[in-house]
Length: 210
Image (cartoon, rainbow, N blue to C red; front, side, top):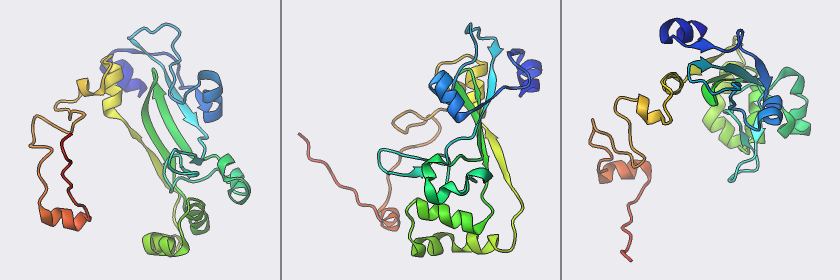
């Protein structure tokens, strides 16, 4: 990221190595997990930072408990006992890279213990039958031993938004899709035939004009 920013884009990186903040520190200090460390908003300076120790679970409008990242994110080793006692206090091995108020990368270390993975599914409200039907093959594979694995996905379009100092993501995409789903290079959105609707279990209902 430093080489890309300084040698390719020709901009300055504010702090090297990138500072690290826990999710709790970020929320207490900045009120957001996507923050801007620059005092002066000079467009030629990029302030990268890592955000770590995200909560494993969160409460949403639709669900009392949901995955903060995804259900395969590993909980912090020292927080494993909290899965039974207080799952909302469990921290995860999720890591985000932020820059100038944008999230420009994110990833995690994955669960490799079948018992832990099954417990996470149960906390999220999956029945034993659902777990076996949807994820039984994964849990069985884990029993044979899984190497630690994880990674991070950089958001190239978001990075370009920061590099180019653009206010909107669509400004850095060659053929952006509009909020209505239309694009200049495809006939989209297009009509769906009855066979496709049947496969998806969907039905079109015409609204009465008011």
